[in-house]
Image (cartoon, rainbow, N blue to C red; front, side, top):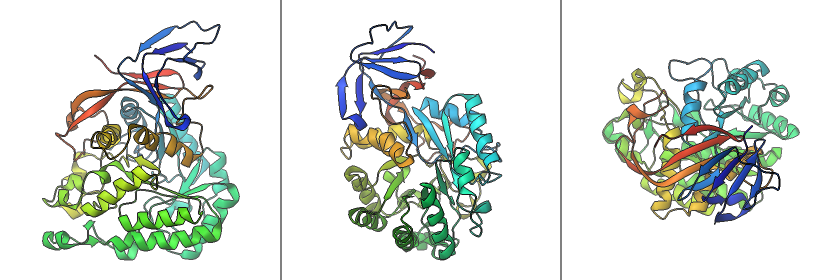
Length: 427
C-alpha cells in the first residue's frame, strides 16, 4: 500500500478540534504523520491539496444500494462509485433489501460484494424483526456477529408495542443501537404529502405532523424503559426535534439525523405535483425546515444523511400518489451541506462533523476522524468549484433528483479509502 503525502490542504477534523493548513502523511492505510513525516517515511505518491479542504471520509447513515433484489434501480458497484465521487467512504445499507437482511448470509453477501467492488465500506443494518414483518424478533446476535453494527425495521412499522419493547431489550443486552424511522402507520395511512392546506388544495392524502410526533413519543418511553441506545432516522418535524432535545437533556441515550433534502425543500416544492419531491417522510412546512436547520446547528440533530434511494425512470412517471418515494441523493449530500455553510446556517466545522464524526460516533465505528493511527478514509474537497446539478451526469444509476439545475459549490477532488485512492476528479 502506497505511502502518500497530502500537502498544503486545510485540514478540518472536528473530532480532534483541528482546523489548520497542514500536511498529512499516510502509510499502510493509516495516518502516520500530521505536520511532520515519520523518520523513515518516503512518499510514493503526492497529492497537492493547496486551496482545498482535507476532511475525514464522509459517513452516510442511510443509503439504499438496491442490491440484492432491485438491480434495475442500482447496484453496489454503481452506487459505491457515486459515493466515492462524493467523498463518502462508509455507507449504511438499510435492511429492506430483497431478501431482507435478517440472516447472516445476506449481511455477509453484501459486505463481500462491497469488498470486491472496493470503492466504499458498506455496513449492513440488520433487521429488527424477521422479514421486517414486526412479529418475531430477528436473531440480532447472529446479525451482529455477521457485521451488522446496528439494527432497524427500516420503513416497516413494528405495530405491537410489546414486540418493540422486547426488541429494544434484546438489542440493549447486545449493546446494539436501534435505528428508528418514526411514523405511526395508522395516522400516516396512505398519505403521500404533508397534511395541511396545500394537501387539501392538491387533493392528495396527507401525512400529519402527529404521525411522526406520536411515534417518537411512544418510542422514547420504550427506550427509557429498555435502557437501549437508539437513533431516530430522517426526522422531519420541529415538534419531534423538540422531544429529542428534551430526551437528551434527561440523559436518554438517543441521537438523530435528518436527510439533506429536508433542510432545503418544503411542501411547496411538491405543489406542482413534482413526483421527484415525493419522499418519506414528506417534505414539511417552512417552520419545520427552519427548525431542523437550527437543530443541526445546535447539535440536537447529530448527523446529516443522504437517504439515498435511486429509482428507475418509470418509478417516478405515475400520478404523484402512485409514484415511489425517494431521491437519488448521494452526490448532492456534501454540496448541499456546504450550501448551509454558505448561507450562514452552519459553521464549516459543524457541517463536516455532521457528515463524518457525528455519524461515526452513532455507529460506534473507527471512522470520521484523522488523528495519528486513524484509518485513512479521507475526502479532499475543492470548496469553490461550482457545478450545476444535472441528472444525466449523476454517477448513480438513479437520476431522480429534485435539485436539477441547482447551482452549487464544492466538489470532491480525491477520495481515499483506507489509504487507497478510489476517486480522482479529472481536471
